[in-house]
Image (cartoon, rainbow, N blue to C red; front, side):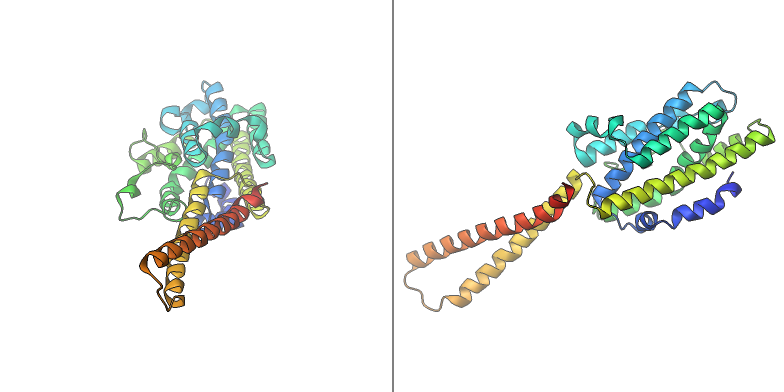
Length: 295
């Protein structure tokens, strides 16, 4: 299956969003949309794997305890958007067109043959296991802005999706999983269908990536708590810089000191008023820049 998906796998890695993702050049809203899309993919895929777990082909690659990602994605959605919004985000009515197509493809595959589920299981789970740790580190650095030398670097908050806590050695498991795939007792026609379905699954993932890129460029991504906090921190930094500038300007602009009490009172009032105006202006600018495009 690896040989059959080489070309489309390379195509997936050259999409705009994928290249940005691999470099860590995405923001919290974009990543939030990504895991929101994946939530539905895993929800329906894992439900179908459970439904057909006794099928002779599906049974050899069905490891829900070790691999299931739905709950971990729910935790990550809660981290990025808050517990009160999880129900809304996981409502099937909110699925985007690319997600709907992916989910329908999973159902269509089972209608043809439940054996085709192993193609989707392969492309998703092995992909997560193979690149997950690298992506996790880049997300910590570029999206969560964690310092590698800080104790918070080892956190799993917001990145539960990449942590397979029930797996043991990941390399050993991947080798074991591939052996199980190769041992699947299917005829040549079914084998060809499985490879074709694996190629299709990569194409579906490319469409997910492209959709996120388009939503981001159009300013149609749901605002995340993480991105909001980053915007608020920008306001605080800007305010600190404004206060320093005000203090310097006041020192340069007051050559005569009438009296200590009068000067202190007037200076305090001017500084407070100026900082207040600056806070409103900066806050309005950040709000317009960040939230204005979300409407």
